[in-house]
Image 1 (cartoon, rainbow, N blue to C red):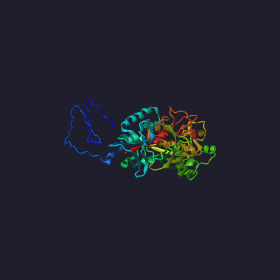
Image 2: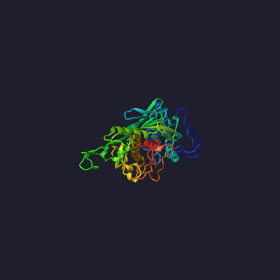
Image 3: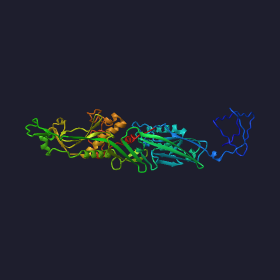
Image 4: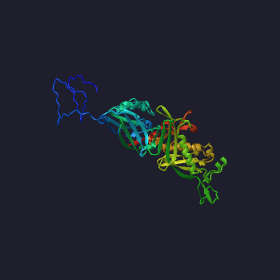
Length: 487
């Protein structure tokens, strides 16, 4: 407390209640005018009484959920339009009456287990008055970070306080980024869960605690979870997909009630009987008469494809994703779930017209093709082998191509979730909008000679499978889809 030496005008003090405590010394009031004491009820003069020691050490705290931001995105990954996303849970904390010695902060799950705890050192604590300035500083940086994420933590720490500061009387905001004490962020903790935050203030051995409960759930989709390990710079992603058995095409037989491929004398005609004699002679291979791949085999290949082409780590050309100044290896683990994202039915196809895999709202089919297949456009190439075989060609099974196709088709639904119909259906602007005319558009380019090939784009030439990978921006936006709503 300072000393008032001279006042030339007026001092006005107003409060609901003021308790003046005198020490063993004197209080001297000197003025050239009057000393006026006024009371609505009664002015009382009592004997001096020393205030109790425990009352002198008393303090008051207030604690509540800060509802200025109602969503949280892990690490503050920007949205599809590169707009600001809040990476923190925030709590308002106020201290009055007296300073304290220490402050403890905890986050507990629905079972009361402590998942995050700091003693006398909150994650980031700032004075409440600085919050608008912090948000403005972050948003002003966004144009400099196209498709990237600004360093929220560094910006926030410029305004952070030391324990000696936030143990003094004042109003503050405590920020928590969702990571536990092992530096792991697990989105499952926030999907349809109830949590609580607790502060404990301590002064001269006296402790006061306040606790607030809040609920969280996924805001965007409920078919992807992520676990971010800051110590290992690793992100594990679980993707749930609603794969289904679409059966087989080209393996049916029926009674010969018509003179099929005259002069047939067989009592039963099968799909493989449609293959031209020219093709059978040219390829010298027998048609497939029963499945060589079960649905379970194809389901396994599909999941492997998603895992392979939607992961970016040191095991593939992707290497990882860059978030702020750190590179994280990302591993995707796809699982079949009837409540997962919409996915194609898997169809085994042979001895029939070759179909094109697709994943649109009205038609979701993923074809595994092998054996003799008919190309409806064969007559456009009169000098080709197809023409001489009357449209039939023999195709060997290609598991790697199927896995890449599966990852691409599943990817359409992911792109739709964060980028919308045009982004997804035009293959990020590289193909025609029409579901039928899905050939490369005039804006499509040849695939790059070196480096990555974007899994979700169309190119004018064929893919190089080992160099094909999900683009970094698309994988970051998959992580963004785990956005949390705070209630």
